[in-house]
Image (cartoon, rainbow, N blue to C red; front, side, top):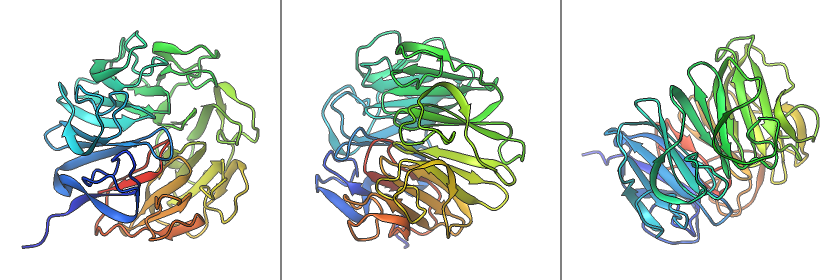
Length: 370
């Protein structure tokens, strides 16, 4: 009998974020997340707030969520603050349709289009009108008809079916897009943003796609922290309301993703990737370590199906179900058997055939694939 496919993880493991039952420092090639077969995993998400910190989430076919890794703020949602290096179930949580993870908090979108969150809440990132951490899911206040969620390091955003974006949590760099720098513990609308179809959150910035996915008329907007050009507006000026990311998107954009301080977009006509922002470790993938304040092409990549950004690394899934990664690799987060950074894409040794899901943490140094 063929062996069942398993969820895989690689990179830093000091908080048990690889879920393989060990506390081994790091893995430079894929290790197996315990107890979860690929077939039962519907979606995966990764969180983390530092190189040696992180947690993983898996949404299962029964619409429950399993979590593992760092739990110091209750981000695993199991009612405790004890980290664990193998998956366990989030309590009081059912009928989940999507998941996301920030620095030390996690969120779930429910079938009734409301949102729950758990974990760290020092800036109000749980959106429940308090600033107290919660080790069990709590409802995000005053938010309904949600179709997508994303989490930054200490803030959260949600896309509603009317095309508006709502944000809450840390706002010192304009992450909430409301024109202020005041943090909020309940959702507020992002200023002047309508017709949005996709959202992504970086550590302290956000990007949104305005207009239909893959249509030539769509546009990328961004707001928040911009010291390394991650908004792509040809400046390094932090923006408190959304601005246009520059660039010519042939055939329109079909996907967006954000890493710690960098951003990425897939163009629909040719399934190629553009990236911009911080490039300290080569996370832009253009063969340099020069910061890019407008989008540049990532050479040598075609057929990009999915894209995810880590703290200082990037990962894509190609049409042939193989994985490429680039950027920081000190913990083996590129899965190419080394700990050397790479400023251009390398093949990840995932030990998986037919990968169809990838994830990386906005502020962490590991990766997941299923």
